[in-house]
Image 1 (cartoon, rainbow, N blue to C red):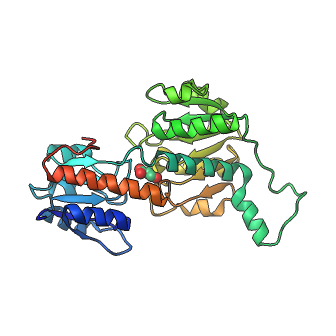
Image 2 (image 1 turned 60 degrees about the vertical axis):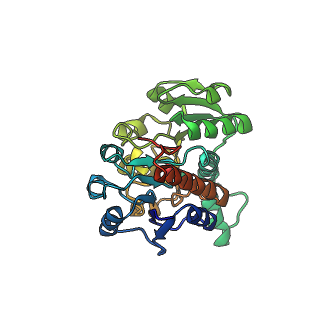
Image 3 (image 1 turned 45 degrees about the vertical axis):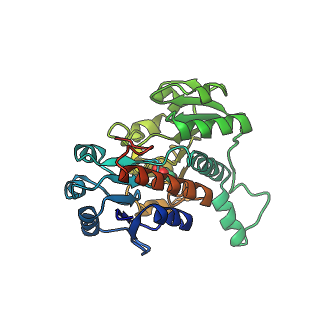
Length: 318
Ligand code: DGY
């Protein structure tokens, strides 16, 4: 029990209890993320760090680490907040929390798709403002059942999202990614080129990690190719989309609507989004259910436990 672990933001209580059973830890108990200086201080003093997407673990932070720092255990499946190569060059493991959040994140994508297509947030506002009117066409919406769904990113979450919508709502699936997906092929999914997907889909949903190749994958050229009735869903990472191009497309009705859980410069939101009715906005909550967050936290604990024992953690990504 003499190993020292730092938790940059409190994890669910059961997870903190489980962590306490395997090591001594300190934690940031405030409702805020650590500053750069605080992170520098943490890496100089601890052997393991449980961290969050908002912690920017860049080369500067990693190079300041003490020689005994063994692991950055990220509380997320994505790890674009960590310079994985810099960590590898210092022999520090980076781990993530795959699989356990696949359903929750895919389900939020489905919720955004339905909200944007059926204009749920606008309808809710009408009711609250006592503008209830069955016949009016202000809330003219979009059919979902039987429509064409374009999935960009054929990994776990994209495939889960597509399978559920194909089986539940008879959607025809087009998909594009690094590899074929048996899960999508089994529900009639067709692997196509990006441009073909953009031109033919009624709904386009993003499920790629953020890498130099996927940054601004969807920009002005891509919006111009989409149907004017297309709806874009992004539960992946904000910078996969050129936000200025998205705002232009939404304002000028190049596409019909969007449902977003992620943004370019989180936690800051481009204020232009707040002026638009045809976008549904969620604050990056894809995995935010108690079951999912507990399961993610338990993976963080297992990864830290292994690293402290000198073993390769189960979810090492480097
Ligand atoms: C993750 O864990 O990377 C996702 O962004 C969850 O929403």
